[in-house]
Length: 229
Ligand code: HPA
Image (cartoon, rainbow, N blue to C red; front, side, top):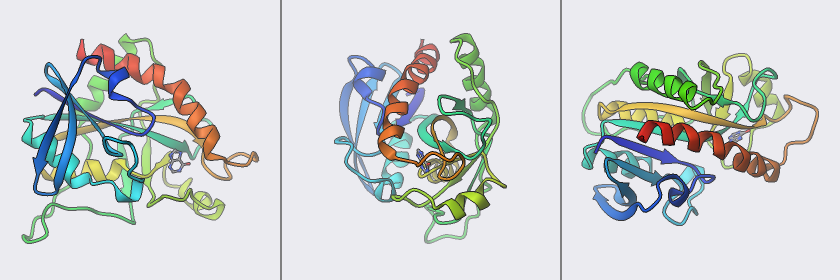
C-alpha cells in the first residue's frame, strides 16, 4: 500500500475514494475499518460511524493499522481554527510543525525510546507541489497547536496560543507523533474552518464551522485526487 489518508468528520470515504472496499484491520489496540482502493487506503479517524469524539479517538489503532497495511506515507486531513487574522477561514494550511501540551501518546510504554518528533519534509513538499498543480492555494507553513477537546478553547487560551502557533485543532499532533514512532512519514493538510475563539469579535459557533468544512471539502478533494492520480 503506497498511501494512507486519515480524515476527520467532514470527510467521507465514498466521496474521496469512489468504489473503495471496506476492510477490517485487527491491531493490538482494536479493529479499524479501512477503505481500500488500489494502492491507497483511507481511515475515518472518528470511526466507521463517525461517532468517536476527538478526545476518545483510538489513534494507536489507526496508525498501527496503516503500518500493518504496509503504508509508508500518511496524509492527515483535519479541520482547524485560525489563530491569525491573516489566515482566513477557507484557507488550506500545510503545517510545518506542531505543539501539544495535553497529550503525548506513545507506543513505547515498556521501553525507553525517545523519538524526535517532526513532520515529513518530503511529504509536505509533495502536498504543496500537488496543491499547486491542482490550482488550490495553500499556506505553506504554519504551527499547529493541539488542544484536548471536545470543548473549544477559551478566549484567554487563544490569546496565549496565538503568540506561538498559527492554527488550532484536536488531533494532528497525536497522529504525527505516533506515526513518527513507527517511522512512517506523516504530513497534514489543515482546512481552516473558523477563526479561533476571540480572534474576531463574532461569536464562535461550531455549526458555522461545519458549514465552512463543507465548502473547503472541494479543495481538499482536488488535492487528494491529484495525489492519487
Ligand atoms: N479549535 C479546535 N479545534 C478546531 C477548531 C477550533 O477553533 N476549529 C476546527 N477544529
